Image (tube, rainbow, N blue to C red; front, side):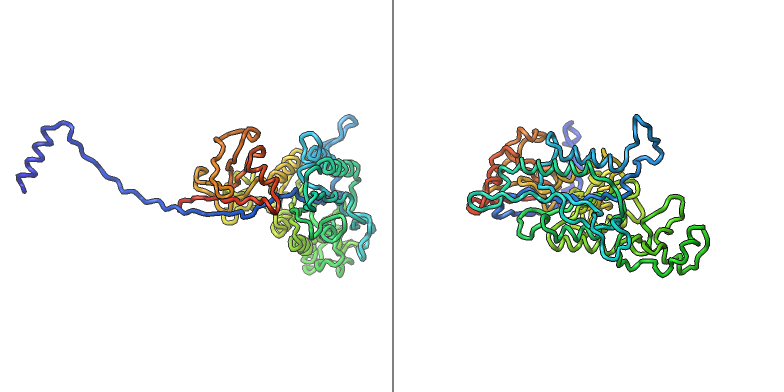
Length: 444
């Protein structure tokens, strides 16, 4: 045996090509396949979106508090910026007026609430200002969107006209208006097969609850002391802090307004009741999209309250790929739930409002778009089947107008609008339903 090894060494020494190999250990990769089936999928109708628009007095405030008005160039205000953004969003050319069935409700309204104490400051709407257009039906009696675009755009134009002419005034009865649109004719119908959404655009925190348990009515005698900057008992100071007064008087210490008899309840922050109203909307099948407009909606109590409304309302901002970048600047993704840690849309001006509105309409479910229930490790690890037949994807970076099959991006499969599969989906009915299957592979 020794002679064999000696011979081998001599042989290697004589042959210049003799090599030594180093073998590295390889960690095995485990893969798991997820199947998502959309059995009997039928046409997704355009959603009903009720714009619930805050016209409270604070909408008159300047976007930049340090701006100085001149006759030639008045300073932009919240209401002027909102008008421009909403008009562009709903416009006929390049707008979104026909992508959904829009309605409009302003708050506060003109109908005083019982016990509110201040006429019209906390009023309710008398009716839905711009109701949803009537549903169209096919010859077979099936609800359809075919031929409805002219009516949808007419509704959108009417909404723009009303927002352009509204005069801001009053408080912020958010809880009351959310309950109002849930039960009022001209709004949502339990029998409507469409997706249902409230688009809440507000620049302030909710108040105007005459039954607010955090009222300070027992301490109105201290109004003068607080106004003069005096010291009040600890019990009174704690009650004022809990009230979190949402009404202010220029050059007067915070909380004084809520120590007046008429405002000792309606002026306080109406957090819990408003969140409950959004929860009732979701229970009825309507989700609430929250847009906070203005610097006051950035942090503090605004962040807490608007975040709570967005979460219980069922439509928080999402980050489907688990990336912070999907949530924008100064925000991060909650990767456990694929939801942004600031779940509402926060905008400071008209440009940001326009961007948010476009993002909202883009993210709503569409007839030929599907959110995957699992994310692939690599985009190549997604397979799509229609009626049992595998469909190859379009080449990467194919423009949507030139696409013919499907593409994948950030957790969403989109079928080409001009492709056969999307056309079949749009033409589907009870007799011609499309069976779709998505196979997703992830490494573990």
